[in-house]
Length: 111
Image (cartoon, rainbow, N blue to C red):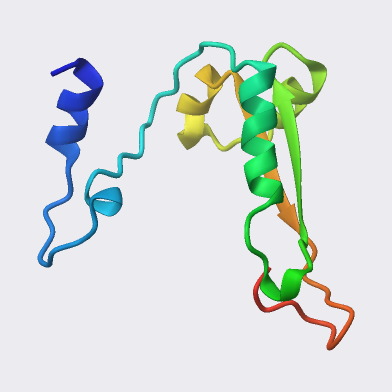
C-alpha cells in the first residue's frame, strides 16, 4: 500500500449502513500537492463542469481560477481564513460562483 492509501484507510469513515464505495472511500485532504496542474487537465475539469447537469438547464454557474504565483492568486489568498493555512500549498485555486436569479420566477432553487 502506498502512503496515500494508508492514510485513506486510517481515515476511512466508520459507517453504520452499507454505502457505495465512492462514499466509503472518500477522503478529504488537509494538505495539497504543490505539483502544477497541466492546462490539458484544467481544460478537462472545466469541460466536465460545463457539461454537468443543471436545474432547468440554466447553467447558472461560473468558475474563476488562479495559478499560484500570479497576482490574482496572491490577492485571493489574503481572503482565506487563518485556519485554512493548508491551502497555501495548492498550486491552483478555483472559485465557484452561481447566479441565483432565474428568468421564469426570479429564484433558481437548484443553483
